[in-house]
Each structure stands twice: as C-alpha cells, then as structure tokens.
Image (cartoon, rainbow, N blue to C red):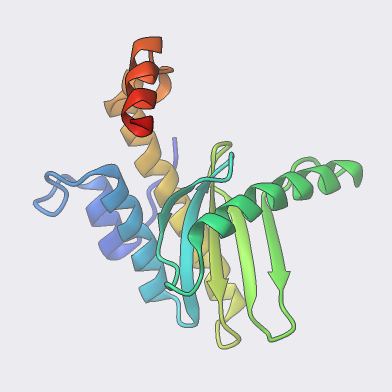
Length: 174
C-alpha cells in the first residue's frame, strides 16, 4: 500500500471522492498528477509516463519533443541502468539522471515494475525540489494505478481473447 502524502490539491483529486473525480478516467488523473508536479516545480519543462516496454502512457512534454521517442529511449535507458547497477553489485536501479552540456537534465524514476516517470528540467530548476516532487508524483501515480487495478482487475490484467485480437487486427488493417 502506498502511503498518502499531504500534497494539497493532488491529494484531493486522487484519494478523496469528490465532484472533480466523478466521471474522470485514468488518463485524466495521471495527466493531472503530471501537470500538478509541473506547476509546483519551477524549471520543469515537461514529464511523461512510460511503460516498461517503451510506450507513452501520458505526456505533458512540449510539442517540440516527441513523447514516443522519449518513451522508447527510456525503456532502453532503464534496462541499461539495471544492468549497470547489477554489474556493480548495487541491485536494480530505481532512478537514472542525465545532465546535458547545456545544463538541462533528464530524470527517470520507476513508479513500479511496469511504469516509469520521465521529467525534463531546465538549468533554473532546483534539483532537490525536482527530486522531492518527482517522488511525490511517483507515489501518487502508483496509487492511481493501484486503484484502477482494484476497480477493474480483470480488464486491465487479462490478455485479450483471440476473437478480440482478430477484430482489432481486421479493424486496423481494413
């Protein structure tokens, strides 16, 4: 169970049943979590949630940055981070940081075994604040996903039937 943090507006939209949460879908909640982190963290340029297979879940990155490319690179980056950490007898990596020559940095943190959060921050961002808000958002995202799995366990965890796959392929091809 993920602990509930005192995180103001974000805590209310995620954990308390309110008028704001009625009729909201999973993507809206996840996007709100990222947008809130962005609003609370000066110098944060954007964020994206990615699956372990390198697919974009939700993105608040600027239009000039392709979220799908970032997601694909993130999957490779996490695999490389895990391999490096294991070779150095450090266990698995939880976080990867890249600092560019222009002073900007990219942080990747695992939310759980299937999802990671990627943030892009400018030179003006305070690293301590970025890390703190990233951790809080990571915990909030984990809680949102956990609640979704509890509410719809079979639809999110079962593999689609062969008939469903056939219908999807026929629809997407023809």
